[in-house]
Image 1 (cartoon, rainbow, N blue to C red):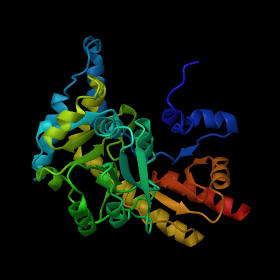
Image 2 (image 1 turned 45 degrees about the vertical axis):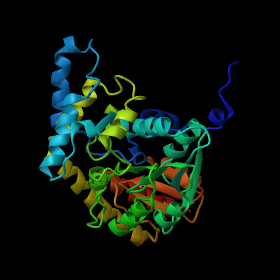
Image 3 (image 1 turned 180 degrees about the vertical axis):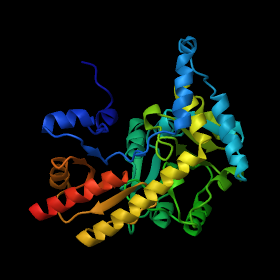
Length: 367
């Protein structure tokens, strides 16, 4: 039987959660609450869904390949940034099948056998998986106070370093690195190293000291800023995200981007979601309300948590995370174990958050 190279065989596949209906069938329970994948509980913008329905009515177009250049969505993004005072041209934008795909394309474009990439741990697992897929080496720098230790990450750069990954806010901790420390870090990054700044949860951030990473694109730094429509825009099922970089970097990335990597429907949905500021604002408000509620309840239960700038909360536990996960699961609440004694919990709708707290109280009482 044909075998992959050892460095590929050593990759542990990402394990997604089971579908809710399957879990309910297995456990014999109903009306599970899924708080495991950081999805927007409000769902997509009604404008986006209506646009998709209209697109489907014109079924004659569905036998045609999507617009491989993403012309209309790129121009819509460019206009959106311009309206907010930031100049981003369409040729500085690349679309992806979620921002995940763009991470992978960047690694395959700029890294080779034996090259190194610096990243934090714990952080988004796809960084190290992508690096391993090209037989690269992941240099993992532990978080300090649940945040990226940018000074130590800069110390880890050497002549073999080709890329640096920064999740800001970080997944799974929900923490951010602020403007001053980020600028100090960028001043230490040498030429020839691509800094990938993963801002999947950008829209949820409320801290005024959050760094303006696009200014580094403007100053022709070697950065790739990644954002997505999967989180605050509620389009996770459509799989579409985008990257912003100097047009020369985008040109290099396009060498390995598949010709039709985003679908016609995903482009339409994203374009119209981008135009619905009301839905985005409501999504952010629901998240903030849920965050405040959960903080108060977790405080009253005596459970530690990490204050978050995203749409999830990271809980360090005094018990095994697998047992904690299973106990909640049997109460009909799905969370995400992130380590031996850590879980990540998505902020849901008010009724979902209340259901979580009820389940937590029952689990604590049983324990």
